[in-house]
Length: 394
Ligand code: GLA
Image (cartoon, rainbow, N blue to C red; front, side, top):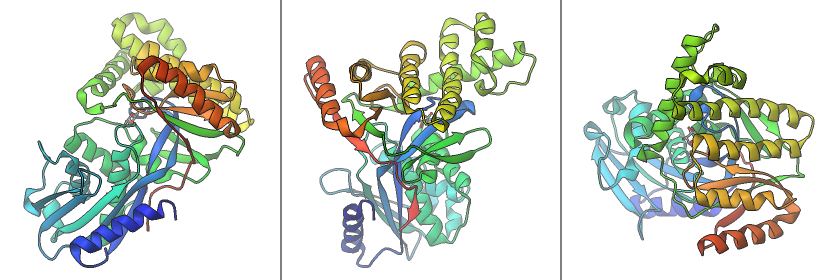
């Protein structure tokens, strides 16, 4: 089993704290975003993959109405949060990490957690680096929702489960995210990419072949999506869509419905910031569709070139990159064995995703580390990523 050692540690901690084995354990991976940035909430397209690191959520029903959550990875020896079913609500200060599992539990019961009847006791933890833009929070939500569904005997389809996690992000964690992270965690496949369409909510697996691999390069710029920059980007996209709905003769509900040719013709009605923000997801949708056609022909280098374009669009138009991520991509561009590189996820820090020749991994790591160190004095963290199986009960 993937990450067996983490599973063993979580189960051992559960047994030590609660004196018996957990009734259910679920695993959910983090994700890398490969192409298609900030397109999900614009009802567009994304290529992503579930990664080989994730979160385990071990749980048993409680005898009474108490909810107990133990976060193994917070502090030196973990941190515990408890509340009664009647008091399940957003945690405003202190143990704010509890908002992810608590919000997920809340929405699994449609906002009426008292309906659960009994509480639960859980220990969770994993090996996704926090703040790296690899969706540790979605992994926690998806492992929570699978394990809790099991102990409460609830059956829901994967899209509904993903939306429960998204609602927890919106209302408990305070980030107005799309559905990408939760869907990638659920629909991932070993060795392949997930191609998502966020209008129809359909998720397709695409094989990539073994001649290329992904490398994540984590900058030391912390990424935090709840500080307003993500929300303001989303708002600008929604405002721009309203403008295009007025001036175009076909229906527009989201930027998914607008082409880059239409943006050129009708951008004058937007203010400068809105225009810059809008062209990013519009261009990204077009790049994902072009990329899909290239992958079908086996043209991974062509696909990689689109990843460089995607980063340029982030840097120039969406302004969700930062100096550290730009340094990594500029450095990657100079290495022939790197076919593509771009920021991955929300942006404003976090990680870059590189499409590489795995045989040249050591050379790539050395070159990128040297450039990064020369600029900032510290080293980024580089790791080859294996696209992996999506979330499941263990
Ligand atoms: C974050 C969000 C996702 C998505 C990406 C950007 O990861 O949680 O919903 O919008 O940013 O593509």
